[in-house]
Image 1: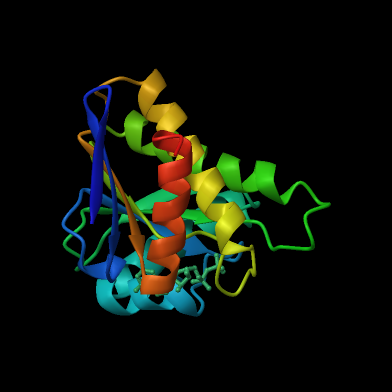
Image 2: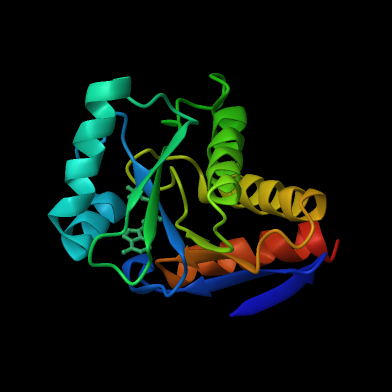
Length: 185
Ligand code: ADP
């Protein structure tokens, strides 16, 4: 695990299963349907139970599909986390379709939504790097840079922001990016 303090907030990178995190909100890398799916989305709905999907259905009725880069909040159901923030990352199409900017928006909109709901601890999975095929190395740079910039701007708003990587390989990539961006090494 690596941990750094940024203007009164902790930025943590760790391996693990995000459904087991004891934070106020976990982020779901959902799809635009909000009706559940594979990967981390499926794991969150399985662990959190049916209340999450019920709220997702209500949101679908009111707002329609969730565009990539946007975020919405629901209950955490049976999870340890009180809330789930659902976002949709970009599908990787080779990098010519604004994928980086959309990924940055996804992280930022999750942080905005958390901040506006008074949430002080949040955990993210590696958005878009599974089924959506965004290269992990680039995604890691965007994730860390966006979170770092956000914590530098909104000083002390969050107690902690955690990236929970599912594999050791992804964790190592995130740590090496983190060292480059934050320690400039
Ligand atoms: P996307 O469609 O945004 O690519 P995926 O769920 O396919 O979303 O993958 C996103 C990342 O989530 C991948 O790195 C995958 O290994 C990871 N992941 C899958 N299950 C979990 C879990 N339970 N906790 C944390 N990360 C997970």
